[in-house]
Length: 98
Image (cartoon, rainbow, N blue to C red):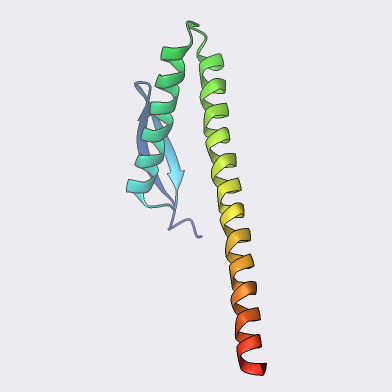
């Protein structure tokens, strides 16, 4: 990534505009910001606190939980696929070598 690849993408989260320096696609950065905005708004609605740091931390914990669950699901699928590949290899070996 060179400096030429980096651009400023303006995003808005909770009514605040943030200039994000990124080489990522602008649409993708906007989607990320929208997702974070939604998570913060959900945390704000669920928490009667007006402390925005607390709300942001709760939103971050929710996002981290989603990430960890998705990562574990991916690992589970990888284990299942690996087991199936091993079974297929065993069946092929048996069929070929009899």
